[in-house]
Length: 401
Image (cartoon, rainbow, N blue to C red; front, side, top):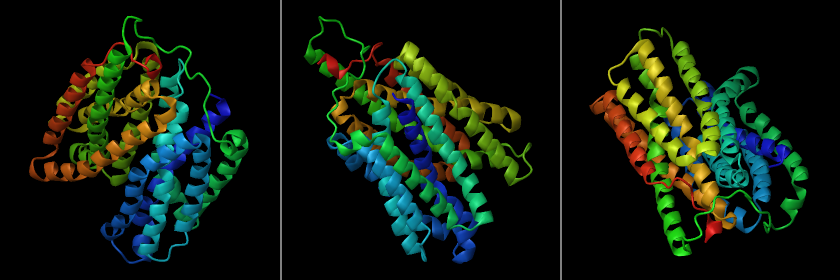
């Protein structure tokens, strides 16, 4: 992939996660005082944006496959920028909910479209997906940091309009970089991967279709289970650390710093996984990551302070490391003509699971404590391990049919 285009796509992943999380910090640090509402009262107004973020993935992927992926990325940069500027004009919680819904619609474009552009095959596809994933994680990490600075220096509205203007300018630059692809309906005639793995010639197309179907079921099953693990760990870590690291933390800022440290270090596990995907394939990588998670989820039970911090870092390496694997398999198997739609389905599944996980965490913690949550996560890791065993050593590709 062209280096400039890849950089634009990475920036897009950063901005996608960044924009969707601005409101959480703005609500906590500023709007509670300005609008005289509690944090609990404000947060529900963000739900419309998250719902749009998940549900509109499907039409976004469909439009990208039917029209132009580069064109949809241009729409993403411009649309998410303009709607974020719109949020800065809101004068009531209802208005902000409407604008956040609009932000969510444009935010939904990135994952099915950006990943479909990156996953065009080649020997380094795993590494490309992994690097792109790290940019997305950094968007999560920097959202609260930059929003906090903007609130302190100018005000909460600047936290929306300033990055909004920046996104529009990036969109203009992207247009000129990809002008030919944006203005002309794409009919991809590029051979996406001259090194695609072929199944033995004696295998007929019917068997190949069955194999692709079986692998696809593994992809979507592990997508759902992996989402339980990822959402369960990232959402619960602050509260887990509050309970388990009391001997080494004396303030909320120290606790937050330790959580940021774990997330930042763990996010780079994707780079290692990306390299391994390109070298040894997804089956072995999936098995390794699942074993790491299974072992350290079980070890975390009953642990406190420094040992708990170390074990948490290890299982988060597994939680973050598993992110590129399914994206890699979809990129290898899905036909170019509908690859964006397949990615869209993958993210709708993830979103549906996220809606369930937060109430699950609350129920388990209230009734049983976090040790039982880690038993559940260990069962999830074991399920992924069993599913990964059924994967072939070499992935089938639609070019074999």
